[in-house]
Structures are given as structure tokens and as C-alpha cells.
Length: 190
Ligand code: HEM
Ligand code: HEM
Image (cartoon, rainbow, N blue to C red; front, top):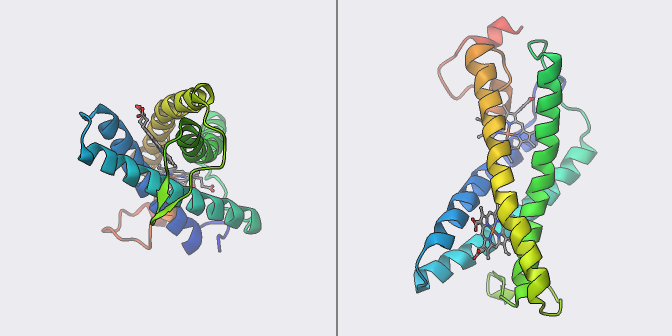
């Protein structure tokens, strides 16, 4: 469970597992679309779709967990008013994009008539093939990828700024229990 000062195990687990998967999906997505047509390319497409659907499941659980477990560590005193607004907006938009990306991918493939294999079962959505609608979701997925990268850059820059410049516990309280040599930030924030 989260407390007033710390994220709980479940919130940290969801944050880091989903972050690693999404960063992998962005890198794979950009790489595979640039590859020459080959078996490896389509293999990577299938893996991208599989992990994209897995991440969607995890995100849905994460959102349900967040709704059930309302308490969340408060923003620290080191945040200016502007930083509070930017941080809250970026977090909100990250949640929205975490749903938009996998859903647009799934819909793009389904309307385009391409299979979405999930451990041997085709989970293509039961929609009529429509290239125009498929193209709209393709555009959303494409532009969404760029939006995600911008949000993520802001998010990571904020976390690093708080850790190295403000020297507060923003990053520390999202990490597993002090995995690195003590930076002293916790002491300063007691
Ligand atoms: C795709 C990758 C990522 C996504 C989607 C993501 C998303 C989020 C979201 C939605 C929150 C708000 C949690 C909540 O209040 O419920 C959050 C918090 C946080 N994230 Fe990430 N994150 C990602 C990667 C990272 C990385 C790479 C870092 C470290 C450099 C990081 C550091 C943090 C920290 C420190 C917090 C806590 C902020 C606070 O307490 O105000 N995140 N993240
Ligand atoms: C959080 C989940 C996901 C992220 C972050 C993500 C990200 C990306 C990115 C960055 C690209 C490259 C876009 C480009 O520059 O052309 C891409 C392409 C693609 N994604 Fe995803 N994706 C996700 C989930 C999914 C899912 C669930 C599916 C389908 C079930 C999917 C299907 C595809 C396909 C087919 C392409 C290639 C499109 C083309 O050939 O132009 N994605 N994805």
C-alpha cells in the first residue's frame, strides 16, 4: 500500500515493469518499421503486438489498483507551483497515453485485417476490415509514439532534476529499498 511518504510495493512494481516494457516497445516499434521486409521483421511485429497487449493488461490492473488504493505520497515542499502543475499534467497524460498506445495499435491491426497473435490464439478484434479506419488508428499510434517520447523525456528529466539538483527523495521513494549507495537525500528530507 502507498503511504503519505512512500510508494508501496505494488505501485513500484507496476511502475517499473510497465516502464521497462513500454521503453522496449517504443525502441522495437521504431526499429521494426525501418527494417527491410523479412521474416525477422514480421517476427518482431508479432512480438511487439504480443508485448503491447500484455502491457495493456498490466496498465488496466495498475489503474484499478490506483483507484482502489487512493492514498499517494504528496508532492514534496521542494516543488514550485509551476512544477506541481507540470508534474501532475505529465503523470495524467502518461496514464492516458498508456491506454491510447496499445488500444490504437490493436485497433489499427484489427481494422487493417492483420492478426494479433496471443500465445497461439488470434485476438484480432471482431470488426469489419476497413482500411480508412485502420489508417486513422495507424496515425494515432504513430503520432502517439512521438508524444509519448516527449512526455517520457520531461518525466525522466524531472526525476533526475529532483534527485541531483534539488536533492530530494522524489526518485528514491519510487525505487526499490535503497538499492544504491546511500545518497543522503533521505536524511535531508526527514
Ligand atoms: C514508459 C516509462 C514510464 C512511464 C509510463 C511512467 C509513468 C509514471 C506515472 C504515471 C507516474 C505517477 C504515478 C502515480 O502517481 O500514480 C510516475 C511516477 C514516477 N516516475 Fe515514472 N514512468 C516511466 C519511467 C520512469 C523513469 C525511467 C523514471 C526514472 C528516471 C521514472 C521516475 C518516476 C518517479 C521518481 C515517479 C514518482 C514521482 C512523484 O512521486 O511525484 N519514471 N511515472
Ligand atoms: C504501450 C504499448 C505500445 C507502444 C508504446 C507502441 C509503440 C510503437 C511505436 C513507437 C511504433 C513505431 C511507429 C512508427 O514510427 O511508425 C509502433 C509501431 C507499430 N505498433 Fe505499436 N506500440 C504499442 C502497442 C501496440 C499494440 C498492442 C499493437 C497491436 C496489437 C501494436 C502494433 C504496432 C504495429 C503493427 C506497428 C507498425 C506500424 C507500421 O508498420 O507502420 N503496437 N508501436
